[in-house]
Length: 420
Image (cartoon, rainbow, N blue to C red; front, side, top):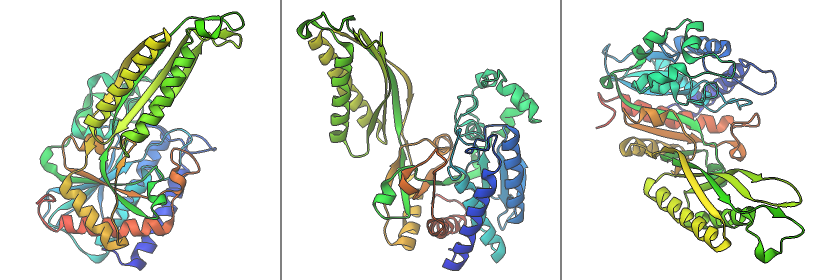
C-alpha cells in the first residue's frame, strides 16, 4: 500500500492530469470528448505517454481502447485488469471515467518505482466509449474487449451521418478488424474499476470511499393515458376524462410507493407530453417515460408490476385508457463477492469503515463482468454532481482511494490468480 506521502503526491498528479485531459475537448465551454474524435485519439496518445512513464508497454486496440501492460515477474503471466473510460457525455465533468484510468496508472507507477512485480501482470485500459454519446450505443470499448459487439453496430450513424465503420476508418482503424480487440478469457483473472460515485451517499455518510455491491439493472418504458379532450370551460368536472389528472395521480403513487418499497430502488418519470397542450383544453392524452433501477432484478420487476397494476386501476376508475411498452431492459450486475471483500478490507484499513452501496449508473464493469469477475471502488464527489462541469472531487479523497486501491491490487497480484 502507498504510504500517506506517496499517495498525496500521486493524488496531485492525478488531479493535474485530469485537468490536462479536460483540455482535450471539442468545445471550449464544458468538456466534450466523443468516441474516435480527434480529441479522443489525442487523449489516448497522452494517456499512453503516462502509461509508458509508469513502466508499461502500450498499444491502441482495434476498437480504439488505449491499453498498457506492466509485466509480471514471469513474462506472459495472467493479468489483473484495471481501468475505466476516457470518453465523456456532452458538457461533462473531468473525473467521470478519467479518474479510474489515471489512478490505476499511479498504482502501477508506485510498483515500478519500487522495482516490484507480482505473480500476475497488470493491464490498464482506457475504454474508448462507455457513454455512447456519439452513436447512441454504450459500452462500445468494453464490449470490444469481451467480443460482445454486435456487427450491426458498424452501421450506426452519428448526427452528421458518419457510421461507426466510417469513423473507424477515419481514425486509422478497420471495421474488418474490430473482433481482434477481443481478449481470451484466460488473459485476465479479474477486473477492478475505480470511479466517482456520481451520487450523494458517501458525502452524506462523511466517507471518502465506498465499495459497490452491484450495478443497478433497469427497466425503461413508454406509458400513455388516453382520455377525452374537451372545452376547459364547458365540461363539468364530474364528466371529465382527464388524462393528465390520471397521470398526475400515478406519478404521486410512483414516488410514494418507490420510497416505501426498498432503500436502494429508484423510479423516475423523466418526460411527459400533454396533448393537445392548450390552456383552454382538457388534456385528452398524456405520454410519459418511466425508468426503474435496482441492484436486485426481482425487486425491480415486483415494483414495476405494482406500478402497472395501479396505473390500470387509476385508468379504470377515471374512465381513461392506459397502455405501456417496455423499450429497454438490462439486468443488474452483482459485483464478485471475493473481490468485493478484498476492496472492503482495503477500505477498512484506510478509513476505518466500509460502506457497501449500489451503483445507479452504468459502467464498463457491466460488460466486463460478463466474462471476468469484477468489482468497483467509489470515491466521493461533491454534492453527488456528475455529467456536469461542476463535477468535483477532493485531492485528499483521491489520496485515500489510491492507498486502498494500491493495497487491494498489491494483494491480488501477489498470487497467480486474483480469485482464490
